[in-house]
Length: 149
Image 1 (cartoon, rainbow, N blue to C red):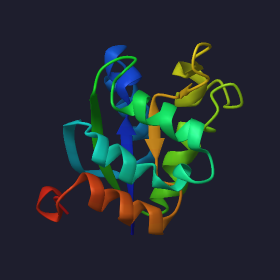
Image 2: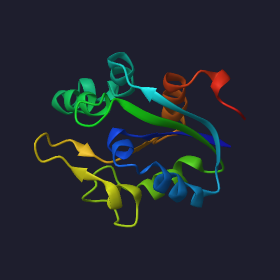
Image 3: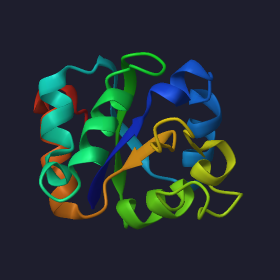
């Protein structure tokens, strides 16, 4: 059984897409074991996107602004789903990170965009990409007591 962190990002919240996204995610038949609204602090954003800091510093800075709400709102809906092949199932429904490359039937393909002013992928959703990253990310966003197995 795998766990996966899903974030419905600020653009997803401001556009009231949470219901549509959760409905689409229900196609996975995975179980929700954690859910909460989070005001994203700079510290949390920096920890979550630390992998971009050295390799892509400009993207890192713009992504921090995006997730912390400079463009929309500073809230995200953080979810933990659990089940067989959870990461693969969720990432398949989420679509490619770049919304222009995502299949139009995926969440990112349907709702994402590239902000022409900043170049930031406003791709509505984050989904962990590996079991190791999922556990690291879940521990950043949730206390274990907030996960109901």
